[in-house]
Length: 333
Image (tube, rainbow, N blue to C red):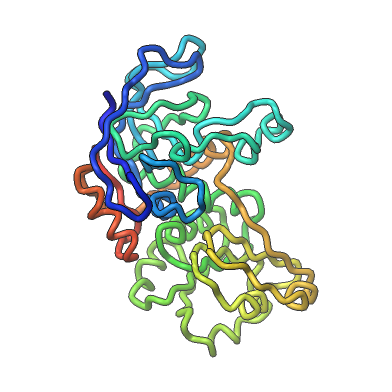
């Protein structure tokens, strides 16, 4: 039996749960014995059924680090005892145009690690081995776990769109934003951190921000017209979109990775003038995740975490709900 913690109804505390481990696994599957699992705000959305996709009992968790216990008969690139990670995606069809192009994260028939599938708030997880990633040796497990979702969420658009010397603003210095600052700086960009918390300035600069802007200071914000090549918004709240779009240089882009729960009301004139654009990004392909992990190890990029034992999962979730985590909560199994 696999021991885990599950939500049995929307917005409820998690409780202990067990489900049977299959005697036989699929030919491309891997069984991972979990040592750490990060908590993402998406886990809160799943627990609360905010996206109307949740089925109960629901075992959240998709920032998983552990060791391979056993693999299917056709798995060739994983070995028992190997330290690995699993992120949001746990499978894809393998046949559509997006999978054939190496963009499996865009597959219309993808499998999510914790949607219709038991996730990582557990002692084990069973997933498609093609979505299991070796973790670089010197990377601490508790710091690596959030990279599997938060890290790739910000790395992918920065890697695909920016170039050295670009001026990049990161809006929100939290679980996503503190990683975005590190990645953007390591990619050679000049980084400005935006936060409504003045006390984060010292940490933001230590993470790699060249400038820090208090997002409540409308006078300062208004002076930043035509300043940035890219603005990456990591927050899940509605912003003054017209104000931020005015900060973009011609051909600039506002990149949305924070799951804002209300429609983005963008005045057409705010993007027509200057040929600006609003785009979004969703995790990254397996190839991009492997690249991101190697890049993070080489550049010594790591998540700042608070670690609690798995049995304290509800206390950890409360810290995330209350925006008290600095910067990611990680469960130790």
